[in-house]
Length: 219
Image 1 (cartoon, rainbow, N blue to C red):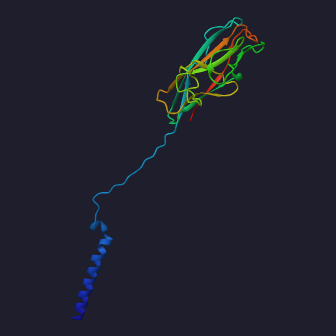
Image 2 (cartoon, rainbow, N blue to C red; image 1 turned 180 degrees about the vertical axis):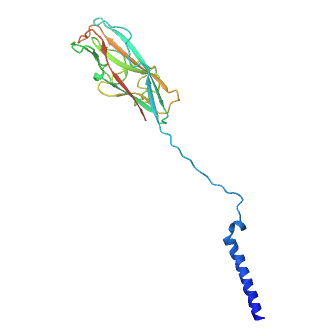
Image 3 (cartoon, rainbow, N blue to C red; image 1 turned 45 degrees about the vertical axis):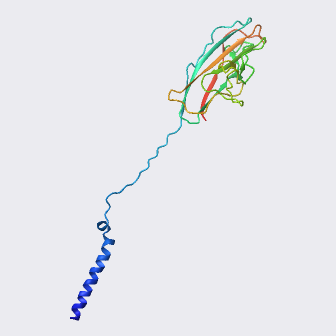
């Protein structure tokens, strides 16, 4: 009888232990999930980029100028800059030959049309007995000077009335603080040559050329 009771107690103990261990060994059966959710984050970098096109790479000024009696001639080209850079961009001009125009016949004496004397945009007003070559900017968001106004606008706010020449240094034409539309931002670069009567030194006859390099960079 004692052995029988011991067997019953042992069996009961085993059953009790199995009941206690079963939820640990088989939690899915006891507490099965009815749903689960995880999040996945995807990243992609888009870099900033800039593109500039120039309408006319070769410009012939509007008319010949008489070397003694003098006169003026003008020319222009367009610039279009596209960028997705949120800080905008700058366009810088660098002129060859320290901003002068040079006769295509290098053997001629007096083969120079002088650079307009100011690197700061100002009203086009060549001095008496002088030759001058300079440029101006219209439209777009122009370079802003320390006074907070456009360096290329006159007191009345008109574009294209102030001219400069960079000489041997580069000069900022445009400075935009935002990205552009997909069609870009348009501006115009204007050139002017003036010979006042009887320039000193005299300016030899022939064709004169100058090369300007435009560089667009992101801010």
